[in-house]
Image 1 (tube, rainbow, N blue to C red):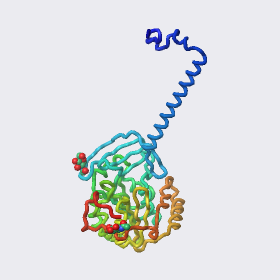
Image 2: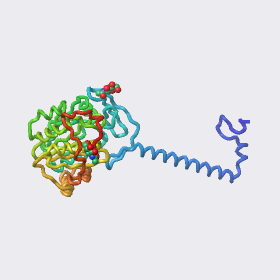
Image 3: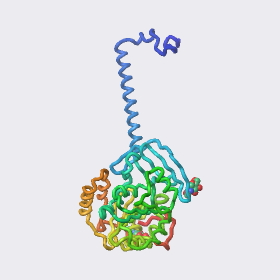
Image 4: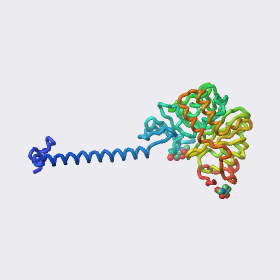
Amino acid sequence: MASNKFNLQSGKFNKSVFSKIHSSRVHHLYRCVNVRNILIALCLFLIVYIVKAWRNRLSFGQYTYVFQRETILEKRSSRFHNITIAQSGPLRMLRFDMHGVEGIVHIHKPNILLFDYMRLQLLCLLWYSTPERVLILGLGAGILPRVLHHLSPSSTIDVVDIDTEVIDLARKYFHFNENQMIRTFVEDGRRFIERQTSNQYDVIIIDANTVNGHIPHDLRTVECLAEYIRILKRTGLLLANYPHEQESRYRETYSRALFKYIYRGKLPYNYVLIGLNQDTTVYNLQELQMRARNLQAVKSIPEMSWLEEVKYIHDEQQDHWNRSATIFTDKSYENFIGDSEQN
Ligand SMILES: *[C@@H]1O[C@H](CO)[C@@H](O)[C@H](O)[C@H]1NC(C)=O
Ligand SMILES: *[C@@H]1O[C@H](CO)[C@@H](O)[C@H](O)[C@H]1NC(C)=O
């Protein structure tokens, strides 16, 4: 009878049933098995948890975060993108068209650069610790101009972005603010460059990714690179971030554009090309390392770990690419998302 074995109301075993198994040996075994089962279950749970965390982790150089459930803070559509602002734990992200992440900040440590390519782009400070004038093409979440301003408050920084909604969202969610030293221009990047007078910028940084992490075609052609060189000071330098696809084509386009010297910062998913203008000093890798240590000492700003990225820099002699790769030109317009691989 059920009521004899288990008292539904009290939720306890009936005393008479319990007494039948109440030999101390059986009782001991019963407890052992139970404890062991619980331990096994706990271990399994822990393993599943660790594997899940490992698979959901986000690594940014020395920083690793476990991706947590994501909250969408805002979605907005502009002429150019469907933009999403999302947050996962302390990480706040800007996404275009649900592809990848365009910008990411740790909301409690906004001056840490989580993207390795951005840390590499900051290495422009190895040439000029306080460049007079900087041009950044592509705002994204506004992280690069904000951190650059933090590191070099006396630099004038011009930022060009085609999308006014992106600028607005950078202000609203990513602590980006224009001030006397940071100006934004809502304009097509190529048009902005072409209407600038010569020899004015110490540093130009290209961070204009659009769909699938590709640079708009008219910002990567040999004619456009010549325009970048025209508006650079003769002692200036250009830093741009590229995806690994078609690396030889980018590299060959650079070498035709008459930079005096080109470094390549190789990263797991992309790379940064650093082109020097005619009178810019060429430093070898040891000199760059030394300049990084000196800069660290001079600035004495916490969070200078981006200087370690100097280890990714290769100089021209170690840089191999297919020299017969077809270069990008204004004439050879192609759909920059789907064009074929030519490495
Ligand atoms: C935004 O998403 C809609 C719906 O998926 C799509 O039709 C539209 O082309 C997208 N807009 C842009 C600028 O990509
Ligand atoms: C180099 O590029 C040319 C032109 O695209 C191509 O025909 C050739 O196969 C490439 N060579 C190698 C080794 O990839």
